[in-house]
Length: 128
Length: 139
Figure 1 (tube, one colour):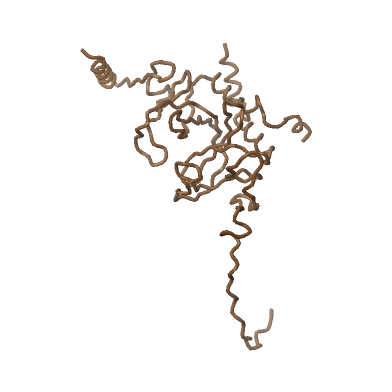
Figure 2 (figure 1 turned 120 degrees about the vertical axis):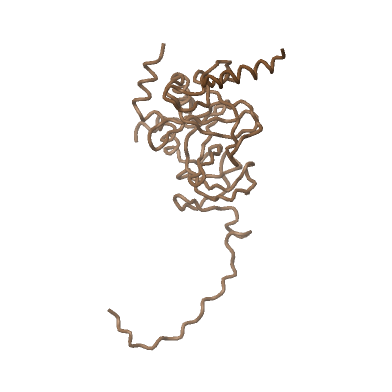
């Protein structure tokens, strides 16, 4: 039995039981496609990496399929955090909402990363 | 209230304007910000591709897939959404189009408003709930 046949079989059984899992392309963690609060997950909760499967510009599926690395945290008007991903192959950007069980340490690391090495001295802002 | 008893005087038609300010003339290398109406020169310190206003960091959605191709049919206003850092420590602005929600990234310029940049960098840390939950989950 070939390996891709096995993979196909695994995929069909996962779908038949309604489990729906995917394997992270960076850290190899097998995660469920649904998060704890029932929303659909599109990035690994451990390393926050994603995969380029949706074309953000014209919509529909994308044929790139490369890894997307998290680059920034953005804040919506509601105060919720959003994760901005960038495809390592074609450079396309996408934004996905943060799940409740995402790695908080990685999120906080990304949020404070601009302040670690500012392009101008921040001492002047103390006197404002 | 003014009296309108005077006869309408013959008004000369408006003269035809043949001086173009933008196309190849003295304002060919400028743009006017859609957010704060500031006249911005395209010559910027530190970058050759200025695409946002140095005062309010607002941009305009004109490029499609390749930066500079001017092929986007949207033309909406792009507001700064967040900041990211390159591996060499350089800050980059992430803009989001308010019309079609498209994202784009651009390097900051040398004369960008430092206060606006720092406010953008501190925006994720404003909410105390997220920061405290992150600290509590630390091992």
